Image (cartoon, rainbow, N blue to C red; front, top):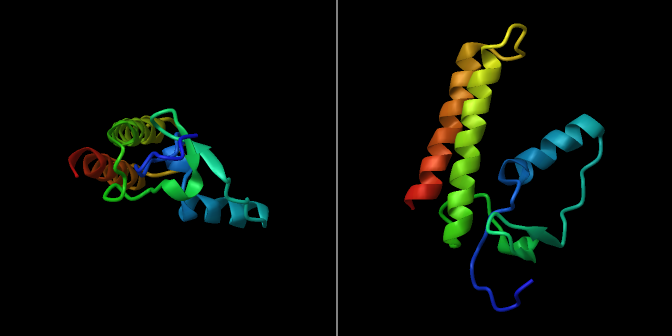
Length: 112
């Protein structure tokens, strides 16, 4: 962990970061997980959790922005692929909305 790193990063598991994911876990298990003190980032560094963000406009580490871009695009493709399987738990419209959300976020990570 670098004490002098001025950048804001994203967690390596960017889709499992933030309050939204913690709320899903809390509502499923009835208990909220503790936020970690230190996390591994998309660029491979270990930094304090407070030096990470899920908002593209806040992330200043270029490697983390590129990582988040790739992860959101991968998620969009996965959602679309899984929605076409027989017995999928989401409709085609729901999958299309989720995929579009992920692609829009990926664009924000790459563009800002």
